[in-house]
Image (cartoon, rainbow over all chains, first blue to last red; front, side, top):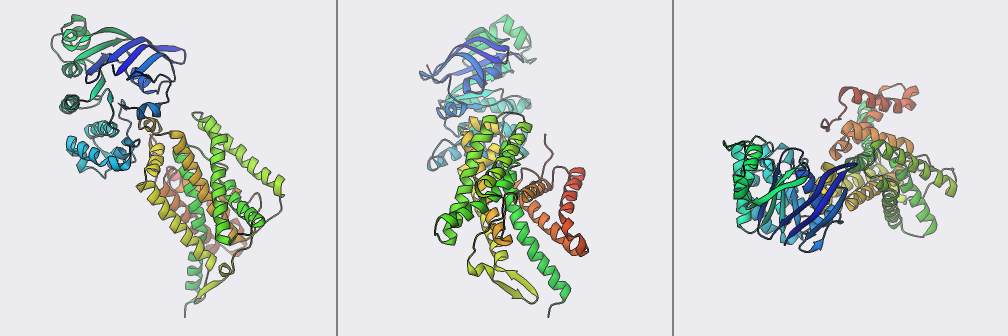
Length: 241
Length: 298
């Protein structure tokens, strides 16, 4: 088992935001976590990568306990997060953002990664020397994903990649995410856009006010009437969230 | 034969570039620390002064060649910066910016009074090599070797700094820290180290500035750093706080402003040139608070 989260409780001050979450991700899987705004999806991601200050419970990565590690050590052990709202280095160029993504690797080894990234996102190649802050929303999302990939992670975490993007771009991004998984990258995806998430993931968890409300194969979740009415916009299939 | 007016102007340009270089060096270090920590480092001028004092102590204690002694003094100043960061600012990581500023006030007083306690408040100086005392003449314009040295050293340092910040992983990570601290953790960057390096580099440059100052003005005392420290802040602000290009521009602009004031005003007012520096600060804050190179903060 690659990622094993056991009974995670996360607190922001006195407020308990995650009330005992248990999640598993096997190697090679594409797992999604869906839920409404405020359900705790981003908090979950932050807790996994070590950015949430107060928590209980254990997180295992390839059997190693990473619960108490500082964020930069978790990043170096092979978990890469694409944060909500991208969190790019806006004053740095596309190239420099990617160099930062590969920070934990030796300079001599990263040339191949550049080729891979620019093959995956040709638009970024065109904008190589441009400041990240001047890119369009879709390009920024691509760069955020590319930057996370530069560290050659064993597990890629995506926090709401569809946020703020036009539907066409969302489809393009999700196609890329699926391609990455097909090529062997294990992915944990957190999304408000339940439709898109369930369409590419093999398994899902439904988060509701800090707890796992449902879990199962994507197909099952998609057929589930509660999920349909709450997250899939009834039978019309367009997500309200 | 050069006219007297032209000579005066050229002479003042030399002066402006000389003093502007020192201000630029100071302003860069100031902006660098602000960029990574959002800290207005009140102690920056005192670290600048320490550069001169370390040189003085090194020459007292060792029989070293001038250049070796200077380099040692600069390194010592850089190390002092690392100690200050670790002791006074890292424990306050995440605190409101005001707290950091107050901490820097304390550091400033500590440094000044520490020097007084150990060496006394009297002015000090150190010997400089003979060739620095000479100058070259172009018509009526006198260009001292000190002025040339200051300018050349500054330009070289600026070039090295630019290369460091754009071509090395560590340098880029410093800019990344200034751009988005939270994202740095996700890159596997040990932010503590990146910030410490920024502080060390900032103090190193300040140390160079202090030694250049001492070479130019000969004597220094525990309070020598106070006014240049504030001018560094003003220069960095005018150029756009957080922007290193802005700091350079601001520093040289300040140098030019001071010199202009001396030229344009009757001689009785020459001593008031600092007033105009502060006036420039007020004007900037009123008209364009983000400075020349600054962007409006989100």
